[in-house]
Length: 273
Image 1 (cartoon, rainbow, N blue to C red):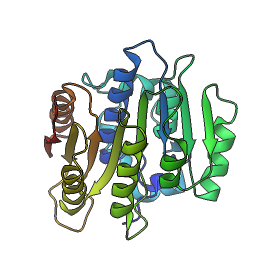
Image 2 (cartoon, rainbow, N blue to C red):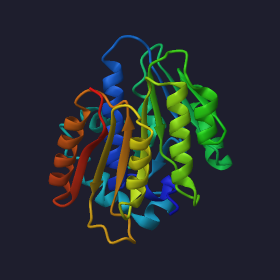
Image 3 (cartoon, rainbow, N blue to C red):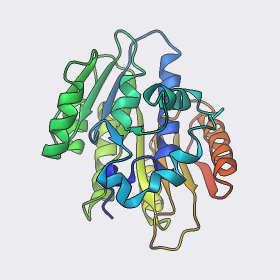
């Protein structure tokens, strides 16, 4: 499928993955030591929900529109960021670079990478003068190989591709394997769309075979999976923080209450602790 973020900004899959992203960053912020985040497929940073693309699908209305005035107790940083970006009412949706950049402390660092030339130009304009943010224009998987490990030696790699390529899953798996070889202690978080269980099954099977460390699989479906439409999204998290499965489970429960529908699963693929 083609998952260009501008068309899907703020939908139910975005709420789940970005709420989880803020939870991972909160974990990194607990310690005073600086951290780095590599965002491999950054997009344009944030999205106008009144744009042609967003209005064409209007998916945000059944996503962030359901939680904007109902703050998430399990992901307070996510809800606070939405309000900070939209003080007079919901009109903009933050992509991962906006979420991460607003969470940086002095000494922390974000590398926001985007390959698409038009998206990169806008990303560069928005963040080239932002403190602690570097913008790069390269293939997201090449960035994992080229930029790891970071000097900070602690942090996160966030992989959120548009799934335009037929070999996307294979590319994700091999990039993850290479990234973990170069940075064995880094947190790696991969997102994938859910129409059927095939993508999640394939990545989880690869992670198990390669014995990736402390790997979580988490999926939240806002709709029943019919094999055709976008039912939800999933995350594969390697080096997941201690008890992060419990935190994700609570997030899924809260989202199900907010949407008054949905199903979810959070389980360990590998667990060393």
